[in-house]
Amino acid sequence: MSDCLFCKIAAGEIPSTCVYSDDDVFAFRDINPQAPTHILVIPRQHIACADEITAENSALVAKCFEAIAKIARQEGLTGGYRVINNCGEDGGQTVCHLHFHILGGKKLSERMI
Ligand code: 5GP
Ligand code: ZN
Image (cartoon, rainbow, N blue to C red; front, side, top):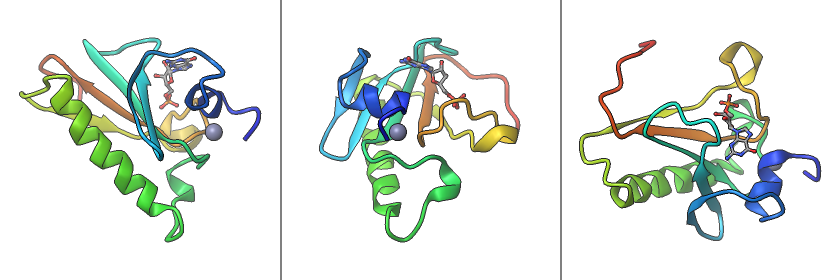
């Protein structure tokens, strides 16, 4: 997607602080961190939101979660962390490229569930 912010970040066209990268997954620090560690994990392939996950692309979601486990170890999140996906307008999604927030580095208090 030529006009997608996160596609451009994954392609290196817009700078970011990369913490993990492989052929399928890119991860970088959130520009507006909500916790001491706040990382966004995205598939390089453009998938707009969780609602667009299908049998054809779900392997990329699994790859994102494999990366999440690696990143958590790399970041020293030994006490745990939270993974969040916002989907669509009601879910609070503001960037329409599937992404998973990793939040950690402190005891997280606010919770919805
Ligand atoms: P959403 O609200 O869609 O779940 O999350 C989007 C996230 O992207 C927000 O936490 C926001 O701070 C982050 N973000 C938006 N623009 C940029 C950017 O240009 N660079 C980085 N690193 N993060 C961004
Ligand atoms: Zn995209």
